[in-house]
Amino acid sequence: MSKQPTLAYLSALAARGEIPRGIIDEGRIFFLGQFTNSEKLSKRVVNVVDGLRTHIGQPFDIHPWAFFSKTLVVGQDGFRSTLDCIETVFPQQDGSIVVVSRKGMKNRILVQDKLRFHHTPDGTRIFPLQNQRPPEAPDLHPFCNYPLAIAILNTRGCSVDLKRPPKILNEKRVRQGKHPTPAHYNVDAAEYLTALRAEKVSRDQGGTHASPIPHLRRAHERILANGSRIWVSSSLINVRNQDDISFVEKRKAYRSTH
Image 1 (tube, rainbow, N blue to C red):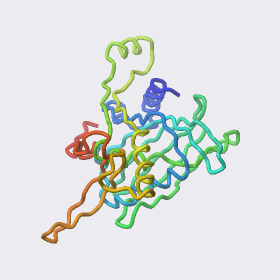
Image 2 (cartoon, rainbow, N blue to C red):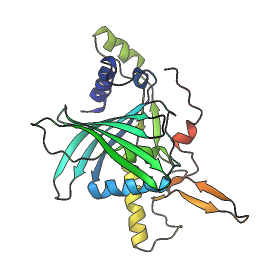
Image 3 (cartoon, rainbow, N blue to C red):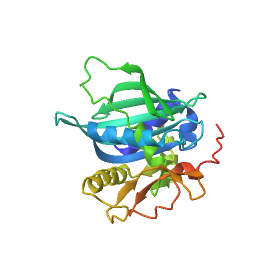
């Protein structure tokens, strides 16, 4: 599914009551773009999220949100498959995060998984809750892009651009009996993954903090001269201004109307 059909699909899910209406009405949607992922790289992203521990903010406080991507997945056996991934995130009152992950190929959603994430002081714990896989569905790679999405939204210097709903086009779509295109954010996940790969290459080659190569500087605790401790957020280095605050930091005062 390309971006426009996926946004229409999300609107249809909201109309059927399968996802909260507020996700559509308030544009709580991120498009991560198209990128290549692998089981090894997925584990490295989870490792980054582990390092954030409990310093993980949700982009819209306790309100649910969604994100989608087109992901070229490379398995350990070298098998490649392009997946349409649509994931809905539900922050819970107990601090856990429930993610409903829909995956498909060739404009068909084939698999639906539900997982629970717990961000703890010892790292992130993942628990499968549900798996819906019809007999005719291929053996799709069992992964979830939530760790990637939440890592990006908590990292300084990442590209997250708001795309407002197209007013004239939406008026035409409504006249045609179609669902309008909601507002959403474009996110450059490929840029983040490239920086994450460069972080490993730099470390393996004995890189220093002054490395000119675009890379990820992971979140960490810093001890000041007076003995106090502060938390330093993740940043993309040598990509754009790493002092740009993360999307989550910008949205700390978010208030929903739904």
